[in-house]
Length: 252
Ligand code: G
Ligand code: G
Ligand code: G
Ligand code: MN
Ligand code: NA
Image 1 (tube, rainbow, N blue to C red):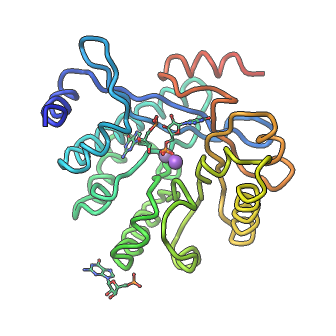
Image 2 (cartoon, rainbow, N blue to C red):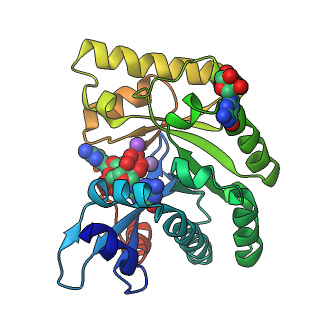
Image 3 (cartoon, rainbow, N blue to C red):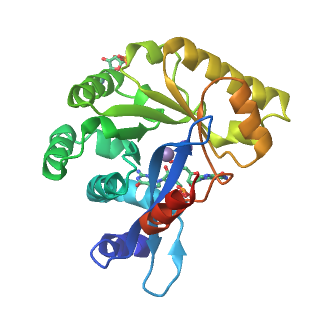
């Protein structure tokens, strides 16, 4: 409850910020970036998102926070574009936020306000949305697609959704969950799952991002078995926008 109260004040008190993490293609050129929320209290201590995102979701605070994230993403897009890096940006969208009756209208107004090309935004949703109230989810995806926004399935492979939906929804991308990448290529079962996702996504024309790429062995495996983009500590840790700009300047 203290956490909930503090989180409610954190945005106004300037304690929340966003870190960015690049996605790179097989040639290791940046192909996008994900925005990840960070909470640093006034006393200097950090609250990990694994702790405060669930509180934000159960309290409903995720709705205004999510809107803040989207607006910040649009501002960051312009900063990156001006620096010569018009990269598609991915934002995490919680189920509660996605299901707000006025969600699409709010998104549309933020796009108009900020002038970001809608095709430069990717909304990461979780498989839960594909399980419950699926008709509504599909309808909403079509509304987003009509705006030009892309939808990605985050943590793909960890939920309980059926594969049938993949052909029934206007999806753009699958993000292979980092638990499978962690087991690749040394563990036979984890690797089989990664390979299957790469193959299936290829046949369905879906873009793939492998999450949590930490080793050259993982990156090498991915490069040899499809054309996934990669995101992970092997390339860099999530960092503030200014640091990312410096990082981009340092790339060949
Ligand atoms: O950033 P990682 O560092 O620890 O994030 C942990 C979890 O918090 C991930 O599941 C991630 O999707 C989630 N998360 C991070 N930032 C956001 C955000 O802006 N919105 C939502 N809904 N979830 C986020
Ligand atoms: O389309 P799908 O196979 O997901 O539908 C499964 C069941 O869930 C059906 O009974 C359908 O009517 C119901 N359902 C689908 N979307 C919604 C929704 O948005 N709200 C509710 N309450 N039920 C839904
Ligand atoms: O939204 P999502 O659940 O996909 O959040 C991605 C999470 O993965 C964030 O918590 C981010 O900080 C974390 N992450 C990014 N790269 C790596 C990595 O290489 N290894 C691990 N273990 N976590 C990572
Ligand atoms: Mn994500
Ligand atoms: Na994920």
